[in-house]
Length: 203
Image (tube, rainbow, N blue to C red; front, side, top):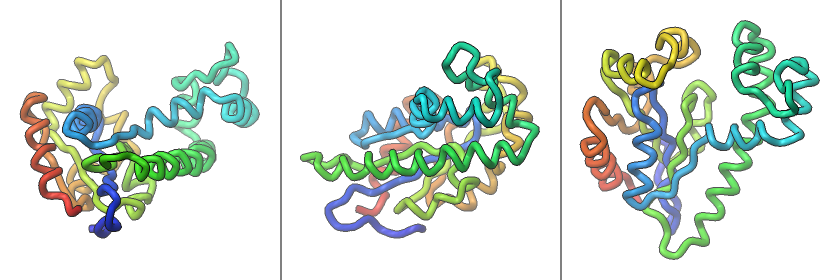
C-alpha cells in the first residue's frame, strides 16, 4: 500500500483495470457516492486538442495524424503501434502534461468545503506507466474474460487480445493493487462494491 493520506486531505486513489472490465463505470459510481473523479483518457483528449500537441505530433509523425488541423487519435495510434521509439516519444510528451493536470486538479480539491469522500483518478496504464507511487491507494477493477469479451464486442471493439497487448494481465494488476473489485454483474452491484471500497479506505 502506498500510504495513508495526509490529515485533512481526501484519500488519493488510482483506479485501473483491463479493457471492458468496467473502469469508467466504477469511476462514475464513485462520483455518485461523493468522490471527486478524473479520467486521464479525458485529459489526454484535451491535450491532443491543443495546438502545441498537434504541432508536435505533426512534426514527429507527419500530417496524416492531423489531416484537417485536428488530431486524429486513430491515426496516431496506428502510427505508433508498431514503432516502439515513437510510442515512447508520445508517452514522454503526454505523461508529464497529464501529471501536471492531475496535480493541479488535486490541489483544487483542497479548497472544497466539504471535501470529497475521495479523489479518484482513472489511469488505464497505471502500473505500466509506473506512477502508482503517486497515490495513497490503488484499485484494480477486474471481470471474467468472457464478460470482458462480451462487453468489448457490444461496444464494437476489435479483438480483446490485440487491444490489451501493452497492458499487464488482470492477475498482475490484481497482485499489484491495494484493492481489487470484481465487476461481473450489473451497475447496481458495482456501485455497492464501490461503496464498500470507500468505507474501507483509510482516511
